[in-house]
Image (cartoon, rainbow, N blue to C red; front, top):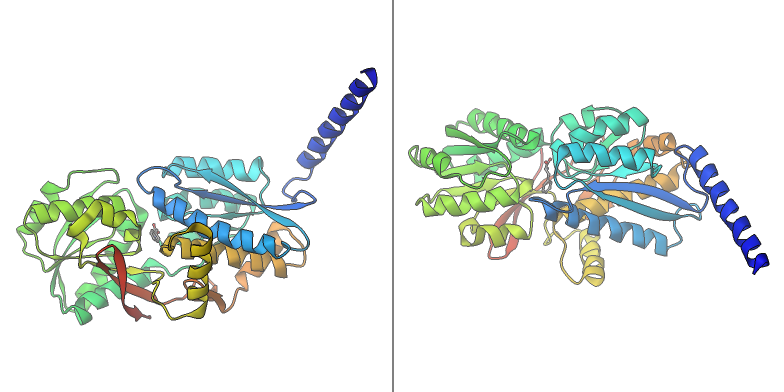
Length: 382
Ligand code: PHE
């Protein structure tokens, strides 16, 4: 018994010693694992954004680990839920860096939350890669902040061109979210281009994230008789807006951006979203081999099809893992430098090259809500 106690004491001392060395390592990874942080909205009004992204990220990391990891080390993902709140996003990213000592961070989807966290990643010089935040300000925070998607100064004009050239629309109303950097930016970029093309914005109305009654705004929109309403917002509010618009007798075509992409859109919006169009990062019907391989592997792992967020999450994680593989050493600075060199990565969302502004130049998929699926309509470039 005494001997056993003796062994236990030695064992405990060894554990303490190990914990201390870990602390002294700063941001260096533990000997046998590479720690990557992820932050996202796993709960709240935008929960499918976080959950879908996480599935794509896990598929990428599990695939890489099954093939032996990176430089002989296994990758460990540490995920934090920010409940869809910008303050929480900042808090969990601080925790991932200072407590978990991650050497890179994946996240967020919503631009407002990426903007809340990016200054922290930049301050600590930990590379942060957002899979799908499209507001231009996000990567302007600094040289450690990257994205693997297009930006709204591209996406807005794409939808304006689609509305004007393809749908032949002349009079459009806009309903935007004052609490979302994404919504405000996308609204401006859309409107500017639509007017340039000769179209007219007949009404501009606003709401705030979390609102559930949009009747006053929609009644004002109805009085201007638009052919379409552009709603640069996220799926929960979009679904409710669509239903209330139809209840008020509005027959206008509904248009949106990537923020609509969620399996919950059909559930919340039901028949009211049918026939709407939005721009996106991904279409399941893409003939691209990398996209089809991704869909096959995703279905095998999760027993369901991916949405665009899963595809973007997969690409962000794969681009990070590839940069780690190429990096001469596993330090945040070396990983950052390799991320910046990403060229022609064949992703689930298409070919990705990181440009000088740390954004990706890519085409946008226009999709149409068709029952419970998204039908691919066209691919639009710059
Ligand atoms: N682009 C949106 C933003 O910047 C986030 C988003 C991307 C939402 C893709 C859904 C799908 O806030």
